Length: 297
Image 1 (cartoon, rainbow, N blue to C red):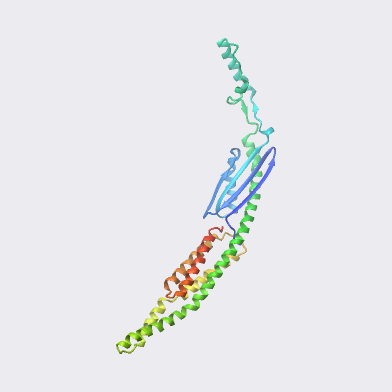
Image 2: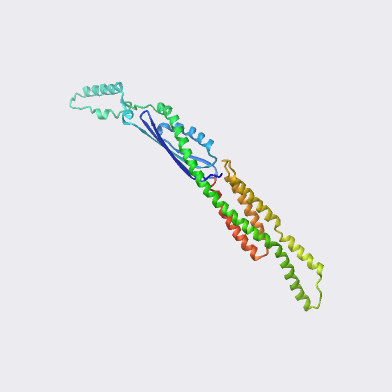
């Protein structure tokens, strides 16, 4: 069973006055790549999230977005009275020295001074509370993402199977046509040489003619390439049909490259218009396969 590398999953939860929401997206990539967008309060969890994700997926470009919402009651900042009173004492001292009682002390501005307001929620405490929740959300989001990958993987497998049918169909035509090319070459060569020798009133040297045909037959022999290409198609189908959830993208990509290599050799060896047309159609199907396997995990 092959999996696509494109997927999306989301999950949310809340606890102790804090709401958590996560989105996980994945796109194609030859390797594993993760981009985390975490709230400042829980950025320390990035390494744990990446480690957990690496254990579940082989490759792909992932974007993990996490949002955190703290209830107003819990998010309200506390006032450090000791610091505030210290500021006020200093200001009273300054006002007494300038002997101007009309100078007013604005408490609103005092609240903006360093150390007066303190966060009601400690970041370290948030991390401790968030860790099990965030890891749980990752598991849920990843499960949804994997389900989407499986569905798209099935569609990919169906399309790849159709291209394999085209390849084997064209390969069958090539296999039937290849032996006839040698016979046609022998007939054409005999006729041409016969016409030339007739003008000179000479006879055809049959051994030399057969030797030339044998050289052509050896040079144009594509039986090995046909066999290897058919073998690659069989391997490809085995990977598609495998029940295991092991990553198959790199294996399929390698097989597609080998199929293209064999088809190129067939095209360069053949000396027949019908085979050439089949090779073009065959390579078109292989190019489609190479494009599609880039989406397979």
